[in-house]
Image (cartoon, rainbow, N blue to C red):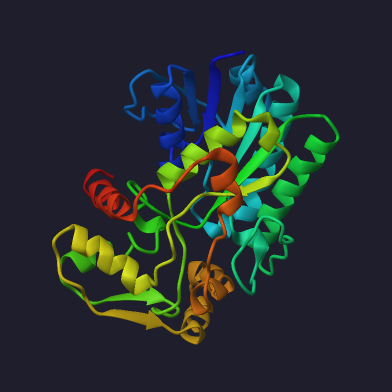
Length: 310
């Protein structure tokens, strides 16, 4: 079997996937527009536009797997950026025979009553969730038609190193470390699952390498839910810092700000995640892959170290 693997994207998940594979002695290529080095030993870097199926196919030819770890950061650009990128990734996987591993998220489930399980329908109510659900539906249809092999793993809000402004905990962490009160979106007292990016990478690599797991989604093993206030307080404790006041920004105000701020408008559409329990059921993935989440205390320390080095 080929030891060549192609990772599209060099964000926190992409870097962890590449590092995990390189540690196993695999030949890893990380694809980004800039081709900027990740600093990971033994990893090669390619500068190309991954929405160019011809260029991506050239790099992926002969690869065992193609990992979609891309994460366009600007929600307002998703409708423009994702469709051509998703199409190119599917085309490349079909042309090359590489297993297609997708880093998904929980948006496709939409608002739910109770924990999110893999057997729930994708019933998103906002355009971002609908888009991500369609991406997986297209990949699954191609898999079921025998045109390629695909699998998707879904994690909740990320914690761990390198998340920065894209994480709800890490976004407010710098101010909290200075002892300042912080404001988070929605309620501060609702249980919410957080997923370490390291565990996303471990689960994605395991799923890609296990033919019996293909053709479906898997929820990434994650620690028991914390409220937003608890999660931030735990990370502060790991830094030896006292708790700070955590205020919640009401969704009505988020929507009002969204009238003039596009990003807040996009976040308002996801407000259900922060006004009710948002809990991941990961039992199937734990049982199938034998993966347990990184211990929460370690996650908190990793989140701090990432803040320093990001």
